[in-house]
Image (cartoon, rainbow, N blue to C red; front, top):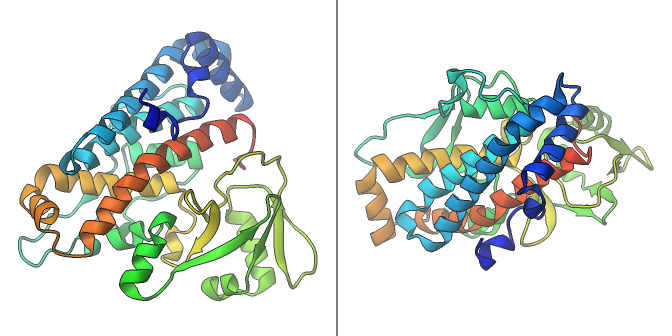
Length: 327
């Protein structure tokens, strides 16, 4: 593992790299989910679990050494293998059928003239890895047919807030105060969701991925996570900015607010990987001529996702292991 990459990779990966410790890890997660024959299945899956992680790491390591033109492809498949490890940690029968082996996402054929990357769309499919990991990892169901623009997906990446602010003149990232224990929300959160304080609290508790408890004056939106939060974890609908080490509400597409960030990265990288493979003329022109804001946005996104995806994978595996996820 390269020195630069290991600093941002799964913090406890080395612990999981033996069959003994991976079996212990899988047995713990299976047992917690009351899966029948948890011990047997942890034995059966330990080598596959290690292999998925090692393959994912290899793709990410190669990304750091590769030129821009193939980075989206390497990152997408690196993410795919790491997601398969996460799925296997909660679904011991994966892959149960060939239906889960497709990507689970589609893109429209781009027009040859006047193509605008940010306005292009991805569409969610009924079968494939995307709906499968969304269900098994995050309990997100019934996603088939939904469409999202590339711009709306990129605006859900908190590390791109400043790029969009300079470009559009509008800062869509609303800072969320977090002192290490309590989250305090400004009233503008209510404006974004168009809800009263009481309505928002009910809505928030029903939809967030954490067990939370509101405190204090009813007019103040302040809460804490009931489980011990010894490390930074995802608290939807807020996004964690790994460079500023802060939470933000991204005032963007409300439908995407409660999509875990790993789902967002999958959609962006699937789409960008398809362009890098099949729309080579447009992709080469973008890289060599840098005609629009799309070039710096994509480059910054690829730089961030190389660090952010391993962070989110680590976060998922270990927050679930320690019982910090709601589901």
